[in-house]
Each structure stands twice: as structure tokens, then as C-alpha cells.
Length: 156
Image (cartoon, rainbow, N blue to C red; front, top):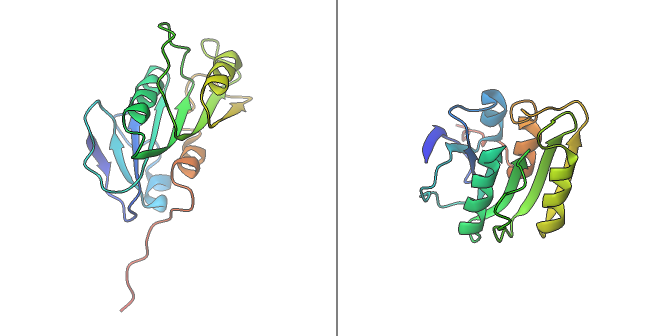
């Protein structure tokens, strides 16, 4: 895992398939610690929210399945149906974001995941295409870190 932004809250967000913060101002306002995801374990003491787009969404699903006691929220953005047919055992509250204009993974892929994940909600973006991570970052953070805001510095 690579640290992208140090936060003030105990909540961390791990995003697979990114090299930079998808929305620096929004992430800062939330106060979460943001990591770029990899297959490594994460040494963060607090709860984790995990996200990934496209093929990186499959990596996010795998990470959530590998660490169910730590990952309580998951966002999958436009992930394809896995060819292998094997499903990770995900227990996290999951938000599925798909673009109606995405020719590769439209609503059919989203519905497929929704039917197979125990706690999943599907949201379709009517104008969205394949890249929803950046334009939907505010919605993604609201799911991964509900009620979390940047802690104010102590008053003097």
C-alpha cells in the first residue's frame, strides 16, 4: 500500500488502480487517510473502506474478501463479471456504481454483482461511461466514510 494522503480521522480508504488522489479537495474535507491499493496487507488500526474501478474493482473485491474483519464498506465501479465465475466472499456493505453509457460493463454487469453480493446496492449513472471514479468521488467517499469529516484542530 502506498500512502496518498494522511487524514485526521481514524478511517482509511484504499483505492485500487489509482496513482493519485481522485479528488484531493473532497478527500481532504473528509479527513480520511487515503492509500493506493495493492495486494499487501495494510497496517492501519481503524476501519477500512475499499474501492476499485474496472479490473481494479475485482482487486478491491478480493481485498475485501481477504480482510472481512477490517473492510466494512466497499465500492465497485464498473467491474466486469469475472470470467472464472469464482466469487469472493464479501461481507462488506457494497455500493455498485455503473455507467449507463459504458459499452463494456453497463447495467447487466451491475445487476449480476448485485444479485451475488449479500449487501449490495446498485446505482446507475445515466450519463456515465467507463470512467466514474473521479466524477463520482464525492458519492464514493460518502459511502466509504459515512459521517466522517476532517477533525478540527483543538482550540486554544
